[in-house]
Image 1 (cartoon, one colour):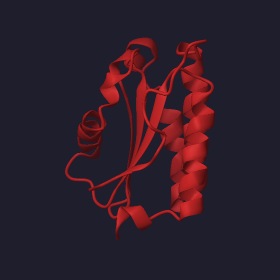
Image 2: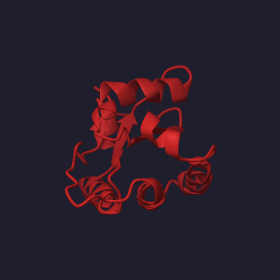
Image 3: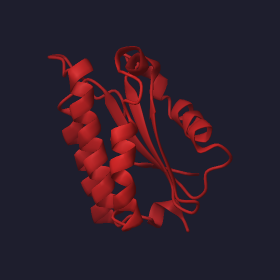
Image 4: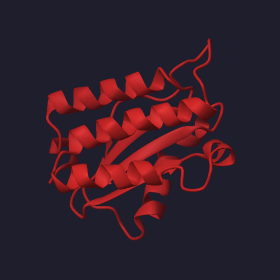
Length: 145
């Protein structure tokens, strides 16, 4: 399956709008990347994608990548080092555990939108929106090339 065909145009627009809404709560930057099939350890692979997308280039190092591999049904949440300096161990566990039932029901759009908004809420505690905040990274979904 081509990852670009995983969501309809309407679903893509909904997810991208949700990223924009979540980023209104925080100075953090949120991205979603869809792959056909992740390779090897999915967290390590998603971390490589995180760097490839230049998500380490934010001012506060507070980027978050939601990574979804559609063929091997893998999911990861990767946060930059600025986040890990501020948040407690297991910060992403609730998001991960809550999104799994959505995915099991093939409610990918709903699960991702919930997770993205939840990430925005959680990040707002440690990285509140700033008066001069700019959108440092695109809100567009990226896909395996």
